[in-house]
Image 1 (spheres, rainbow, N blue to C red):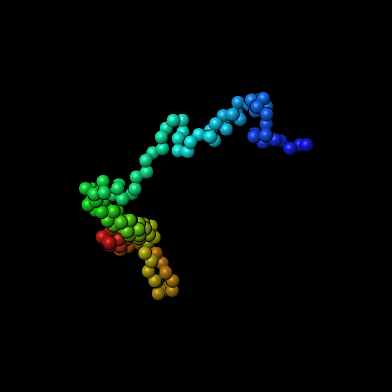
Image 2: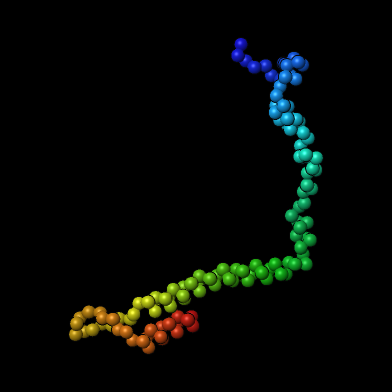
Length: 122
C-alpha cells in the first residue's frame, strides 16, 4: 500500500486516465534525439573547414591581431603620461628655503610649463 504502480503496471483503462500534461511530457521524451518540432539537427562543421574558407582574409586577420596587440601595449603608457601631466599641473613645485629650514611652495610658472611639455613629449 502507498506505492504507486509504474506506467507498465497500469491497466489500459487506468493508463488513459492520465492527465494530458503527463501524456505530452511522455511524448516529448519519446521524440527521436536531435529533432525538435520537426527541425533537423544542424550539420556539424569542423573548425579546420572554417579556417580553409577564410584563407583569403588570413593576411588581414594577422595584421589586425598584431595592431590590436600594439594598441593594448600602448594604452597603459598613454595613461601613465597623462597621470604624470596631471600630477605636474596639480602639485606646484617646492623649494627648500635654508633661512626657514623648511620646504616652501615655489610657483615657478616656467618650471610647471617645462614639466608639462616634457610629459606631453614622452
